[in-house]
Length: 399
Image (tube, rainbow, N blue to C red; front, side, top):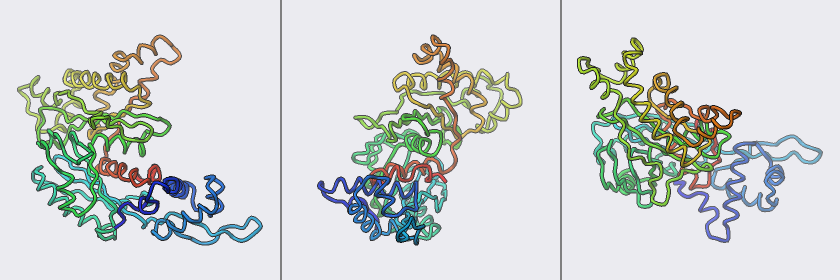
């Protein structure tokens, strides 16, 4: 099993620099490879003798391999090195209300297998059983053995104590004080890292979406479909600072205690004579008569804008992303959300005072449609960072 590969390579405090250098070498090979040993020494500034030792150890662990000779610049033809995609595999699983969504990626960051399995209920024992079946199906699809997985990242809605792997509270899953990490590790026989689904979404967006060029990102996840209950909107927030998920001292940064009525519930209350069987039915009705349902979406946009505005004032993020499972949401609320956030924030007030910067904030607020595997991919990133492999993967984890 590939558990703690980098740690094994450079175990012990005196070798901390070698751990960092190993990560740098892997990162350079991923971004700029193939490269020779001389190339690596030149572009990293690491001594040639150290480069040779690091490459030798990485090659022994099957993470780097030689792929032939490169062009000569006057002397011998250099031996070129590249990342070995089969050197490490990691899995990410999203626990949603109606299904488990899973992916496996290789060391180059490519998704080599993906699969979704429905769940009859959200009891922890059901998650353990179906998750075991999911991993067992993903591994052969990726042409690997289960033991080849370095670890499994798991993302779910709720408040998580990442130190002991306990789910403190999850309203969507109806969980309270569930020792999920221990349960999953026992059932799946794998190293488990838990994260909040909104934080996983934030990491997914930061590394594979609109995070390029910014140091901080506020991610607001709005799920409107595929819920077991439609009274309240499934809402979560994730914060990324300098490429790292920020959970705060109490491990709950980003959690918001705000109940926003689900648009389906609002519509049923405002129009009791009409029956909306699903969120899709509400969107269809809105397309047919936008003026009639404007009140429903205005109410939703106003409540959501308050949450985003508070986050903008406290964090001043480089970008705000509203991740959603509903492609129609931006058309229904996008203009109003941007305008209200502008009006309700200090940033917006300052921009109004300086005409040259007018509307800059509104341009930093975007919508992003969640694909079926986005949260599962995001769940992998924290474990890769623990293995000193991020930002090795960069955007390739989303190819």
